[in-house]
Image 1 (cartoon, rainbow, N blue to C red):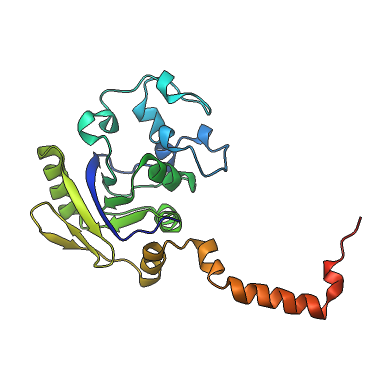
Image 2: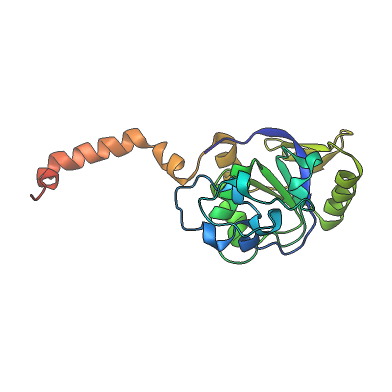
Length: 215
């Protein structure tokens, strides 16, 4: 998993409340468990005018010119600004996969659905919770200034605005540790790879029949 320390990035505003996971990545794209290739279908039903299907060439699609991510001023955004209850609906890890593979590293919103919130941390995406009034002010600033950027400093737990104003945010220490070091659940286990190999070798020496395989 890619480590997250300090991110300075362009902000894209998703000015809708209760954005569910089927809007983030529609159900027809869940057939793949490869964990790659979901970025082109992020917000597919809003992003394109035609219905998308797995395996389609994005270049052959009809983009919706009114959708925020298709507007030139938000191209290359790595911070998504959202409204309350972002990521509600069904549980699917594909939602944070799609956001990450599109290019987003952080999401800022007043609240999230619990399962989506947890899945973000497990997949290298930082979901930041800020008060609704603060998020509303950020929406005003993003809409008002082309090229609006924020700096997300995870070690210091602050979001830094262009004028230098710092907005603190909370994050659980263990989740912060995993993100800063780039550890997913497998990575956490592999920290103990030497002990695991030692244990397996010792167990095999005591019970050599475990190495036998039936033909």
